[in-house]
Every structure is written in C-alpha cells, then in structure tokens.
Image 1 (cartoon, rainbow, N blue to C red):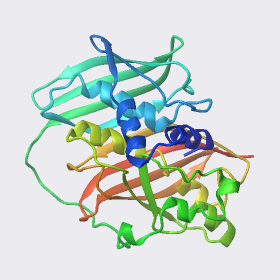
Image 2 (image 1 turned 135 degrees about the vertical axis):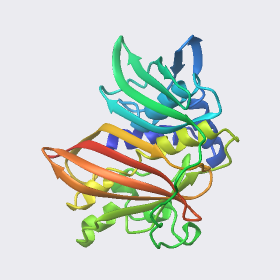
Image 3 (image 1 turned 180 degrees about the horizontal axis):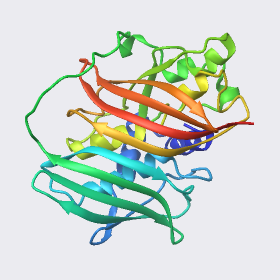
Length: 301
C-alpha cells in the first residue's frame, strides 16, 4: 500500500473516540452503496481522507455495485480491475454497472467508477452458481497462530513517529508473522515473502458478498510491501513513489472476513518502475480461500 493509500485507509481511524467496532461499522457503511438509478450506485469516502481514495475502498465498492445486480445464489469467483486515475475523496464516486451477460451458470458484470465526468477505476467481475467438481489446493504455510503474535501497534513501537502509523483502532486487525518491512529495512534482511494474519476487527453481518468485499478492501493493504522488502526500502522511510496499477482476485471457497485469514504474499519480479506481487489467502483451518495478483508503480527516487 502506498503512503497515500495508507493515509486514506487510516481515514477511518481518525475520528476521535471511536473504538474498533465503531471503525469497522464505518467500513461496512462505506460498502453500503446508495442506489440512485437502475445499474447506477453512489459511494463516499471516509471523513478526513488525504488527497486520493484508497484503492481497496474503490475496489470493494465497485464489487458491491456489481453484486447488487446479481441474484444472491450466484457468488463472485473472480475480479479484474484497473486503477485509472486517483480518486477524489471530497466528492462521491458514481459506479455504473454494465450487465454484460447472464448465463445458465455464470454472470458477468463490468463496473466503471466515475468522478468529475471521468473514469477513475474499471472492474470486471464474474459470478457463478455453486457446482460440484474436482478439488485440490496447496497447503497453508506453517506459521504461528495469530493470537500469539504482536499487534500492529506493538510492532510499530519505536517507529510510529517516523512511519506516521497510528495506534488508534483500525477496521482490519493485522498481525505480522515475519518482521515488518520497516524492520527488515534496518536489519538488512531481504525477505522473499511477506506474511500477515488479518481479520475484520469486529463481527460482520451474515452476508457473503460483504465478507468478499472486506477481503477485497484488505487485499490492497500490504501486497506491494513484498516488492519493497526485496530491496530494503519502505514507503514512509525512503523516497518511494508508488500506486496500484491493476488488481486481480480469485475467490475459491466460502469464508468469513471477521475470522482470521493468512495473507501470504511475494514478489516474483520487478522492472520498468513496476513491481508484480502475488498473494494467497488461507483461513485459519488451512483452507485456501482466495488468490491475488497486483502490479504496482514503484519508483525509487
């Protein structure tokens, strides 16, 4: 996540006096779009946001817009998205849904997010009726359980002034398995993987689309860190300019985003001021629930 994205995500945390559950309630409210016309929805950004909208927010909202036009028995199995322009958090975002196809088993939707008359984000999503078929999956990496790990606030102790990381409640609880990239930057370690446990910091309603959208929101929070960790630089501590360029997610099995899931990510390559990052999501019982790939702009100045 870039510094602008990090600040935007933390916009949910900046309202004084909110506890973790209230912050999560604000995220749920952000994902509850207003329907203003058939196939047209409107979303807003959190108060006190910086100059750009957090990428995970616009991706989650766009997926909500797509899902609101699909029968509930069809669940999303993949999305592919492009970040086109930086979003303006001071004005609402309009999501226009194109009903590309309604087939016997699959439904396809295309969503364009618009501000100031221009597209800022485009998403295609595919939904499917539940079917039986062949089953296999890679095993989850052997990692310590989340409750045994330090909280993000504890991990940031001694770095908070330099990183600008706030210890106020967050909508997503994050626990680093390995040392965070701001620590490995100074220790000289260049880890090939970035592993964090995540979950919504509270209880979510029993709506599968909401859980998928919360995971989509969280998937943009630490992914590009796996690119920077390979080179010993970090957003807040070095002159790094970055932004998400595109984002793809595949959802393999049902899950709850308010239960712990492991986010195991790595960067197979970086070139041309772009870094590629891949990630796998596992439920706490080891079930492989989702896979992500993202390419981001990474300029070390």
